[in-house]
Length: 148
Length: 148
Image 1 (cartoon, chains in turn yellow, blue):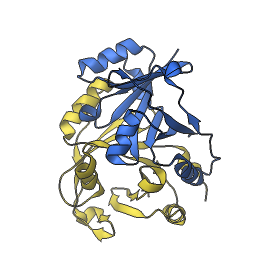
Image 2 (cartoon, helix red, strand yellow):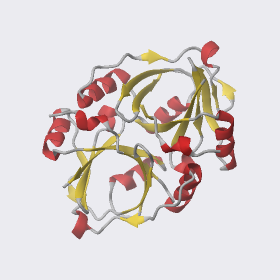
Image 3 (tube, chains in turn red, purple):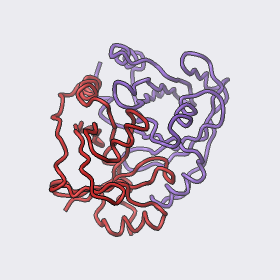
Image 4 (cartoon, one colour):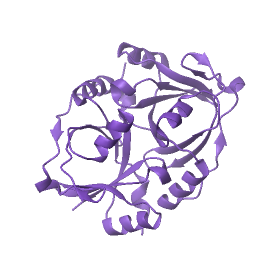
């Protein structure tokens, strides 16, 4: 498998307690307009699983597009999820970095061979995401994004 | 002040318990050679302050240069520091994102106007770093790097 896809970090995700307050602070720092806040879709659309089980976990999201990556703000809004677990355990904090990958199965196989399993996954319009349980090996969560 | 300098994230910093293990895992994921592990200099060189007081906190560091940013691994190795506090509180995790800035005083003034103070700062060869106490406002620590 090419490892080229791991040469470019596309996103850094922050868990926040109050997405409106965090969005206002980031907009002030960046001198940018406040992006819209969107809520993740329901399970019928996302088919989300968390720790191997279907979950109705949801979150509010806001995205700041910087030059070389996107800052994603995430406020969990109920249901079991890696986002809610992180907030309960740590409060606000940097939750993950993301890579875009072309071949999802090969990528998951690569992580598996490293002893790194799946923490949460789900679909979004045009693609799917997978959070790896990579904290103990890599020092933090890695998300892989795969667009169809 | 130009906010252009906040358009480009130059670094993501991970606190790790064991930098040799984390370095090996990252090298495997990236298909890269293992970079050297370096230890921060002594106080005579860094003039490090943590929460406003001189500190002898040290860390081991390793840097993976990706296409669009650098992944920094940090293992605290004694003395008070934001790194040791983070490890004690959270274990391994993503500690900060970094921006390079040209005008340090204006940048610190900008953060101050947002109610964001300094958590830790110090010198390195050719420049200095400042970790902002930005977790409550921005959702995570921001580091500013200023090269002379």
